[in-house]
Image (cartoon, rainbow, N blue to C red; front, side):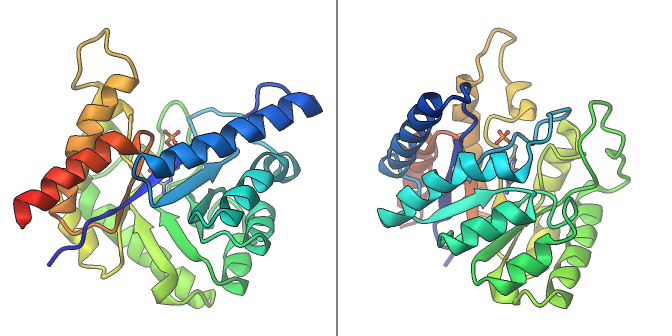
Amino acid sequence: MTARPLVMGVLNVTPDSFSDGGRYLAHAAAIARGRELVAAGAQIVDVGGESTRPGAVRVGSEEEIARVLPVLEALHAEGITTSLDTMNAATARAALAAGVDYINDVSSGGADPEMLRVVAAGDAGFIAGHWRGFLDPADSHAHYADPAAEVAAELAATAGRLAAAGINRERVILDPGLGFSKTGEHNWAVLRGLDELSRLGYPLLIGASRKRFLGELLPAQATVHDRDLPTAVLSALLADRGIWGVRVHEPAATAAALDVWEHLRR
Ligand code: PMM
């Protein structure tokens, strides 16, 4: 029987103030938000210190480590399962030393040539996203004849690279990277053809939460929070497809949807 998917709660640590006081407050607020995510139904807290949005300015690993490490350490000390959303090997190395449970790299090692070596040397899980290069506002890599088949083939190649780097298959989770070099139509095509990805035999994580392709279903005046309902509905529908987990900003909505899904199957 298909297991209930894990809920991964998104925790962005991007402090507005760079003074010590601001940093401390930002960390305290982030740690509190991490606890909130768990209370709302997340089993994993995914901590990120760098935006992956199109055109976002890259953050150096030193700055990224200063943002995320105290938060990861505090959540880990409380027994919370943590994940680090990063494209920097140095940040991954610091987080692995602090006991992080998963490294979540939307570039699956493509952005930093050291990443796979660092992950191989640790024992955390590795979430490898489908990626065709750094995002650019023009979406220059977003060209597909058959999105689901191409994403599956490219993730199969990624899985091969991970194995060659010495990362055991049991540690790997694949993610189609919705919105990464993909238009809304591409995202839908990948989701419709999810079985092609399932056939690779790896656990799948889906990050659809609040993404633009869900916002496009809503009235023009809808806010980003209004996207939590379609996100939750999609989580329940994807649960039927046997996915391993969903990465969401508002775990309460998705947990409620998964409760419905679970009761319906009893
Ligand atoms: N999307 C974003 C960031 N990290 N990680 C995984 N594994 N999968 C995703 O789809 C993903 C991710 C970008 O979305 P956000 O800016 O709303 O967090």
